[in-house]
Length: 179
Ligand code: HEM
Image 1: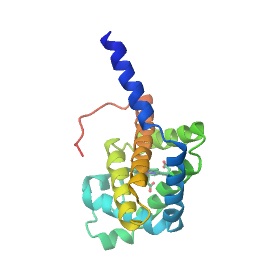
Image 2: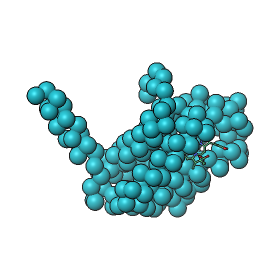
Image 3: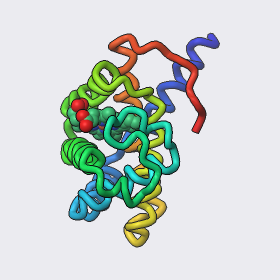
């Protein structure tokens, strides 16, 4: 009896996290403005991410010892990663109606970061949180409460798919820092 209720709760949670057609449209509209300044916004997001969570720099050979945001801004490795992050998110946003494509793009990102870069998955939660913060600030006029709700679901979508890929490749669940 209890189990049935638990299952129902999970189902209800999943339904509440589903991105509606109207929310997809809102995400695509905000993103089209953000992506027009892809490199600048991407670099701002990453710099804030590394300033707020300096331990995240450990994975990047060329700037792991950098503390100065101005110096980070000149790092080609940071810029390259900014472009790649923005490019992958762009593919997800463009394919929000194609759940298989969304899953395959994010599974690829998750698997590469688990197996090749050995990044703790909690950093995806932190980075997507910073991404929302920067977009909300820089595009304040577009970031209505509705857009905020839609983007929060987008963040969950990214994190859920990425962590599913980590689980699939058998990533050990080490205790991680909280947000
Ligand atoms: C939504 C979040 C992210 C996306 C879409 C993303 C995307 C990518 C892509 C497409 C690449 C290049 C292909 C590859 O080697 O896998 C890459 C490389 C990399 N990513 Fe990410 N990434 C994200 C978050 C992170 C985070 C949170 C970290 C670490 C804190 C990280 C660390 C790295 C590293 C170390 C590389 C290799 C860099 C290099 O070779 O210069 N990524 N990422």
